[in-house]
Amino acid sequence: MLTTITPTLYALMGIELPSISTKQTLNKIISIGKERLSSSHLEKALIYAPDAIGATFLDDHEELAKKIEKIAPYKVEVCSVFPPKTPICFASMFTGAQPDVHGITAYKRPVLECETVFDVLIHAGKKVAIVAVKNSSIDLIFKGREMVYYSEYYDPQVIVRAIELIKSDIYDFIVVYNQEYDDMLHETTPSSPQCINASKHYIESFELLKQAIDNYWQKYNRMIAFMPDHGAHIDPETGKGTHGLNIPQDMRVYHFFDFSRGFNK
Ligand SMILES: [Zn+2]
View (cartoon, rainbow, N blue to C red):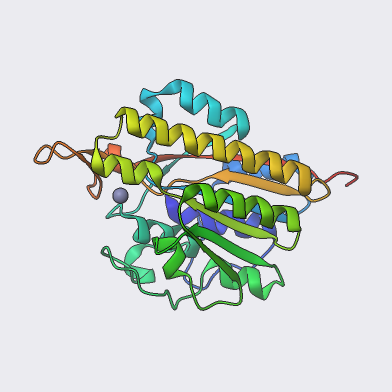
């Protein structure tokens, strides 16, 4: 379940648990993280949030899944939340709570007033940044906090900015959001050439981010993760891609993680 991400970060980073969060964690990822970091806490984390890449798509395109696994080898299957729409999913991912608890239960994008993982990170003295496409859900629903928001024109500008932020070494927790695959699936179908292309852009971007953290965050215990929100299917009425149903194509996603111990730690 997407709600397990926040408590998993809580366990790995040694922060508090947001008040509305579930306590259920991704146990496998916590044990791998602890082992890879010799039981010390994560100091920095980079979360790549690529919109709409579902497990069904990656099962059908194994070569693409393999490429992601090469960058971040620890893979878990996670169930999205219902209805699987972007603001609802990311609200659950970053609060640890179900939609009826965090309050976004339909495709609406209010600023979340409940406690999020960002609030507990800030409370723990961590510097947090969100880099997203302007007016995307992630760009909007977490506003109003003592953190930095970069709202960029589109995915390529998001990645350029994210690499600058990693390089600056100011931030401890960066969320990077891309959306080309979601845009393309609504215009075409989830496995169209345009979508395949978009998914390749996600993977290339994820690799660039991984290289950047390995270069510029070398001295820190660090994590990178590939965390999509939901999948997609073809709407028989329109013949185009869509999502929002309680079916495996929409609900199943894979999250990929990697951990590195800081140099000299
Ligand atoms: Zn969508």
